Length: 85
Image 1: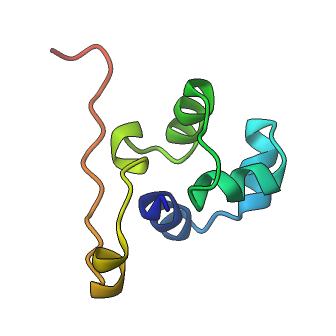
Image 2: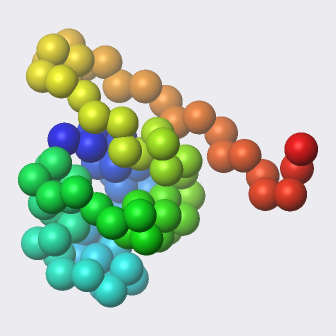
């Protein structure tokens, strides 16, 4: 499961149906991606990261049940500004 995607969607107050429409995919496909039942394409990963204004690597970190049950939820790292060295 990609817990950080769920967290970022919640933080932004978005709904899966709206995200799916914006990305041009079916809501069930997005749900399967979020829950780890389907691996997203590179394009889908980049689109989702851009839409949710978060780093792709952070969004797509997977968590095991131990971390989820312990309530360990990290904060997202700040996005690197494009064009800065």
